[in-house]
Length: 403
Image (cartoon, rainbow, N blue to C red; front, top):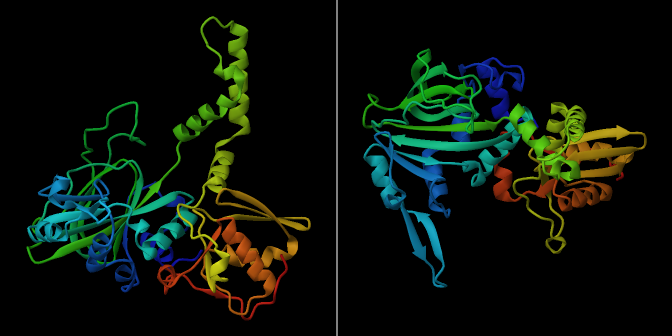
């Protein structure tokens, strides 16, 4: 998938691909001035909050650097069927913002098609699950206290300004669940300055940072989006191995009272499993077996869709072998005739595909990919997530293929 945001992030940070994610602090500026507002605006964020059922901690508010109790800005409404629904009190959110507060919406990509597609594109690019959080602050407001995150972050300043301080790590490769506490900030200041609309910054895992609008004046605001990358580690791989051995009865036996020879058997089997399931194989299979977070199903009674797009969390693998083509992705492993390869590569490209002019073979192939959960029909709203960001594909001038 070729996404406008991914290309401009690479250009801004001077990267050639995702290999630099997590390696070092980087900062730059998007060369496309229209891109930030295309991703999100303050009013659009508030509109998303207004129309969703939300609860804490997904929706959080802060004042003077401290979290506000959720009862201040969340209300429980009871509908006519006496069902309790948690919603944001928009008047309360307005007061918090006007008094110099901050509103945070985690996983905003779950609610907005533009950020949903952006996160999918970043996931295909990086090979890691990606999500987006939005931070809206008004007036002079203190930000979060100096802290570090257990994932890699790319922050994009959407509008307004915010001052940042970024420091180096005080513990190499820290984790949320770790062998040691990591509470002492590093004294090494890597950068201190102001992020303005269009600026982009990469903060690796474990790097201490804080952001504030103090001293920025009471009449302004800041909106930025952070894209978080959940990287897999050696610990993740070791946890996978520990789960995999449960299938072997030898590992389910009690250790006490077992002779040394049996211990050697366990050691040998664990070593063989680690050799067989190398970190590379583990990552490949993890990505191909991860199902889509969400999927619009195929309902034949609605008629065939006129446009579709792939929805797998990672780019599907398409491998030709003799007269067959094997597709692995979204938790599925499917085999097709070689004649289906051109159609598969188009439909699973991550680009929106318009089916006007497609052959019967292509529409049949499309129905199958939707049924298997690798593609989904696009609606007017979901299509908007691609507009001017990902180039659409049409079959109108392509030769038909046979599945």
